[in-house]
Figure 1 (cartoon, rainbow, N blue to C red):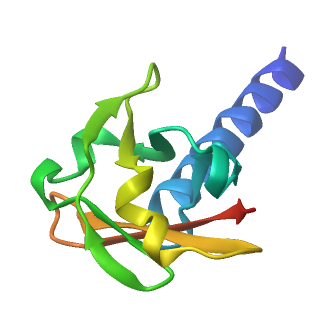
Figure 2 (figure 1 turned 180 degrees about the vertical axis):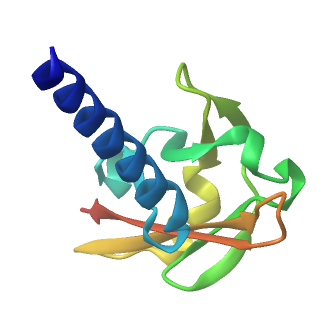
Length: 127
């Protein structure tokens, strides 16, 4: 009986500590960009930026992107995925002038409701 209780307590402690460390380090947050490779001659009309950032934690009208340090570029759409995280849509035509092969760095910028600044980056291939 004691073995089960100790194992359960250890599991709860590990889960609790991992949640604290994930939530405390906002500066390390990354984004995923879709498509992963942007073919300039055959591009779609938008790119999607998916995050691990809860939409409820952000000031929605503060969100913008920078491409290779240029911007701000306003999103053409903001959404929330099934996990409650923010998804940002940006027109390809709005970023085309700032990108060149082989890749581009895209930064998601804005403010948390706490007043902290949001700065999450991702890289997209350019062809």
